[in-house]
Image (tube, rainbow, N blue to C red; front, side, top):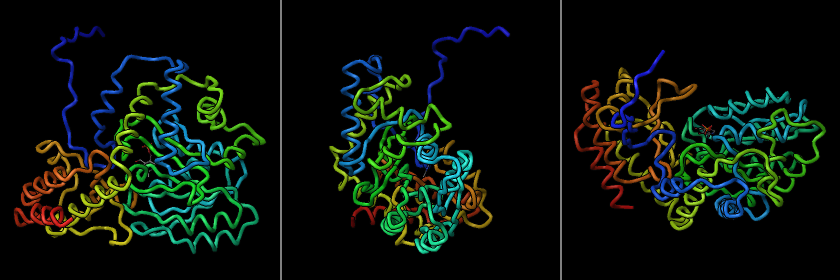
Length: 398
Ligand SMILES: Cc1ncc(COP(=O)(O)O)c(C=O)c1O
């Protein structure tokens, strides 16, 4: 079929959005500007300097002096799959501490690797209880790895890692942690906690576009990967080969997405200029204001205060309200994206993200004001101004 030539004036433009979903979040303007620079070769000495700087900046954000920090070409799921396929061999036992959607994805991947997968599932909306892991470890002589999710984006829960790490170390197993939603918005302490393999993604709290997965690998994980009996099933996500490109000799593996990596360097600089302390405080202040506003509208939050993640706030959809219609109106009439529920929470919750550059007080107020206008027409009465008022008060107090 012959297509008509596309007039230049009709080249589609992506409409501006207020991104308050589970990611992607706003990319920082400095990141986007850095990415629009000229193309450069992936082994150009100047690009190698960029890689070295990215690795150094990542080690600060991951709080590690011991681990090799590098970037995988692919989204957060690439980081997850690289860890499972490079650290596990067929027949190895892995225990997954799961209380949400992304933990289940780990199980699917680990099964494909041929591992003996022990899936420990606990209640959604609460952290995973370490006692469950303790009881399971007692049943095994040899567990190769324990894995969990630090910030479960599907439930809005922050998982404490200390006890899980202690039990894992006592057993001599490796610890893998998903920090896709935590890195850059919550402290991720790779060395202190003793995480052997930690992966994240650029599109949430790192204020860069999707497409990269920053990872940290402990010396022990590097040794495990280097001394495998079998080659990992994935060549592209083989952490040993990728470490050869990022580490010492920069041996060619694949064509690195240079513009994204240059953008990530800028994003990491932005983070460290702000400082992790003030950045975490900003996430905290804005999510507190959002919660105050939602509660003033009479909406119920899913997670109890002590387990809440500042990056994402799930809220129960009131009885009889059309989930999709409210989200569609937010997007169409107010240009605001919020997230739908996943897995066990599908159709039951809205998930409101305030991550990285999207964690802004003006976005909180814009969303609450939009909800105040949409919810009454959807059949849920609210006192107009109550949500915005409560959020403004919270912001003023903090
Ligand atoms: C906690 C968590 N892990 C893993 C992923 C998968 O990351 P990606 O969609 O970047 O592949 C996500 C995505 O939202 C996530 O929130």
